[in-house]
Image 1 (tube, rainbow, N blue to C red):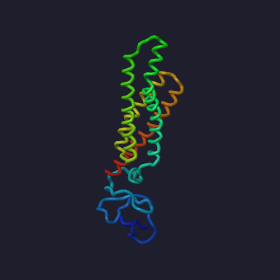
Image 2: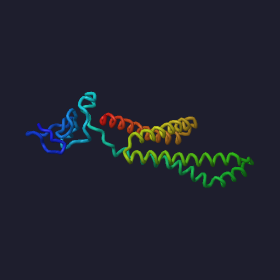
Image 3: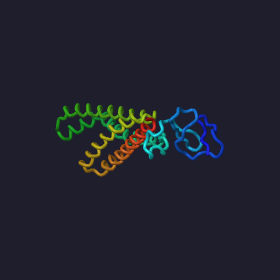
Length: 199
């Protein structure tokens, strides 16, 4: 069985070696590189620097499904942000009607609601943009941070929905939390695998 050197040409006669970690001709002594059965993947690493289970694992590639998932999450989260924006746009009309119907002056609450609403939209947009950028640029460490922050917010949001007790809100919050938590876990595992293969 032969394993080609790192340029792809065979260094021995016979059949091609099975996928695994091998020394590649042209790489520094004491290193190995992953051979996928047809070509070399990734960069070389030191021999014996990993556990036996890691030594047989293929280097992690960035999953295209993660990019799809981040866009699904963005759409799911953009809907509430859009609804908040619409509510802010028609807020004065709603407040005027509410004050006329209830004879309660809520001018002070109006300002607080507007400030909180704008802050939610701005912070939400920043978090989603950071997460999209990190995932689409395949920056796993950054994706872990952004996805972790958003996951914590989603846990709080889901807890709030559970306390509210409305089934639709609980379902939507749970769906968003499941998707966001999956992305976080996926990015965390990928980041750890990349760190191990580059060490």
